Image (cartoon, rainbow, N blue to C red; front, side, top):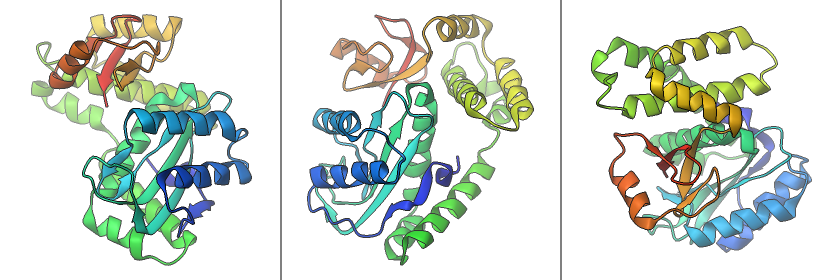
Length: 276
C-alpha cells in the first residue's frame, strides 16, 4: 500500500526531541493530536504504552511500529519520527531504534493496519531505503521518499490473487495457507470498500475475484463471522485474541505460531487467527 495515504508531511519529525522510548511515544501521539489527526490523546497513549509493556514493537533494523486501536477514528493515521542517535526500544534484534512509525487505527481497519506495518517492514528492511530515510534532510524529503518507495512496492504486489490462481500448487485443499492469504486480502478489500469515495467497482471486482479462489467451506464461515461480529480475521498479540480480547492458552498460541500452513480459529470467538 501507499504509506503516504495515511501520513501527512506535518506529522513527520526529522529529529525527535525525546531521549527515551516513553517520551518518543508521547511526542508522536501528541503530534497527531496537535495536527488534528487524533481527537483524544489519553486513550490512544494508554493503549500504546500497554502494548509496549506486553511486547516491544521494535521490529528490527532500527525500526519500531508502536500502535493503538482507537474507536472513533475514520481512518488509520501515522506519525513518523526519526532519531539519529537512536532509542532503546528493547527491539527484537536488541539494536537501537532510529525510525518510529506510530500508528492509530479504527477497529474496522485491522487488516489495513497489518498491511501498513508489513509495507513498512518490507521497505525499511531494504538497506538502501533505510539509509535514505536516515540521510535525507527535511520532512518533505522523507515524505517523498516514502511515497515513491511504497508506490513502487505496491505496483509489484498489486495482484497476489492472480499469482495464486496461476499456480494450482498454491491452491491446494491440503495446504490452507493460500486461503489465509486470500482471506486477509478479502478483508482488506472490504475495509477499502467501506471507506472508498471512488473506484468502488474496481474494488468489488477484486472482491469477487478473491472470493472465487477461496475454499467454499472457509468462505462460508468467513461470511458468518463478518455478518455477526466483524472482523473475521484477527491477530493474536501477547497470547490475546484481538477479536474478543480473551487470553488464549500459551500452548495453543505456540501451536498456531509453529504451524502457519493451516488455518486456526480462536477457541473463544471462532474468528480466524494468526500470530504476529
